[in-house]
Length: 120
Image 1 (cartoon, one colour):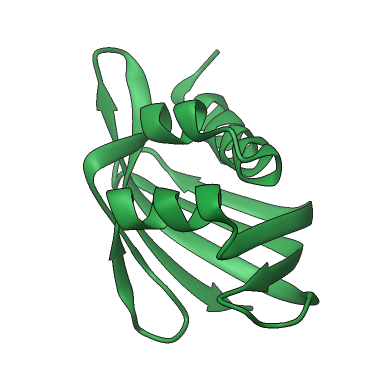
Image 2 (tube, rainbow, N blue to C red):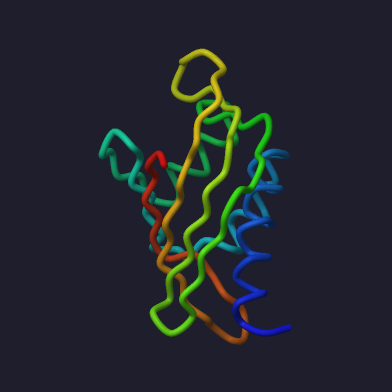
């Protein structure tokens, strides 16, 4: 499997883990220094982000991937998905969510280094 396909698989693996609250997989595919910048501009380090997923402050119910863009040489992965979620006490809603990631290949495996959420 080439690097482009590995990165596309990483995007799908991340969503499956978010939907099932599989914290051990999320722990493995996010770098220790990972930071997620939410649509609000809030920066959330990995430990806090995973705590919010685990404790239900970030609840994801469904995800339908529409596009995945990969630039292996630049270490970029961008996914666009229709996502049904309830976050930070809000109601369940469906968003056209874009997640743009910086990625790095370490010991033969791609991991997420930085993520930025927006709509598309």
